[in-house]
Length: 352
Image 1 (tube, rainbow, N blue to C red):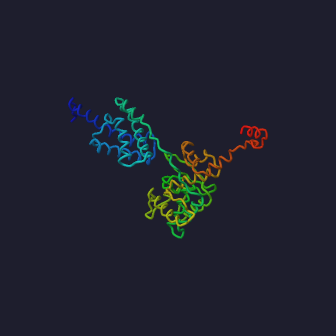
Image 2 (image 1 turned 30 degrees about the vertical axis):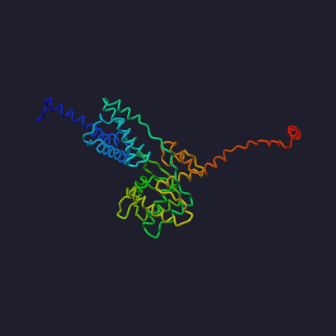
Image 3 (image 1 turned 90 degrees about the vertical axis):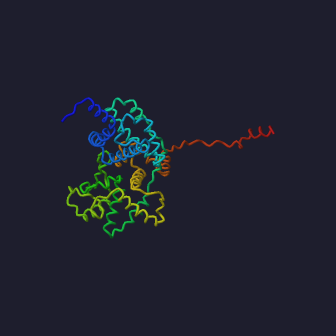
């Protein structure tokens, strides 16, 4: 039976208005991001975490449950209050705060086309600027420290051989940790010149060269894993349960060998060594070898060379060498000493 009374229609319209936030958010996460923007699953997951926190904030601060939240009551002041809440109560860094704001900006840019009656307030939200933060110091290992780290896995064991291949490839390719754990057997080409095909942010792929020693490690490892063919879609790095490694799993492996590397007195890096530090280290060593930034940009998969320029400020040695190479000898002539001017000395003596 179809009910078409004005009273019933009014209730339906009111319900849609009061729950439009959930409707917009569901469409944004399930259709707009993966379908229209074609963003990666990791980006969607990151955005989803932002909206979980946002809904939690509204329920704790304003006692408004997610199903009752509407676009019309989400104001610029409320967004600013949410951002302050992230820093003050959850202890988030400025970088994390800005990431959450970027996710909200993306959502409201999408919503403004479907909710023009709230356009003015949405425009105010979109004008909220990113918070300035001091530029972080980029940590990286020296070449000697990388060699020490790679000497830690026990290659007499199967897991040790896997770990050595994992860490060596992560450094040599400059890959992000997600790019490493997503690798499949088919993404490796061991014929000269050896390359690995990485699938990065925004579903972008790039092919990067790998050095001979890394290629040898990969060949032995893949033979041990019984790689069937170049069309093998099996995951390259798995755990003992034959499941794909997780980000936490890779971080645990690296942490274990970093801890043992500290026993070597030449391993002096006392900062926290993460998987991304290996990526930074590779970029720093390429820069020290004289490779132009634009090539390092393509190697790392950066969308802009601006992101790569941070490596030019990594250490004083790079700065010193660059300054020395740019130095111009002006050949300024020596000025005579005023004490050797006899007339000047006589004049000064008469003054006394």
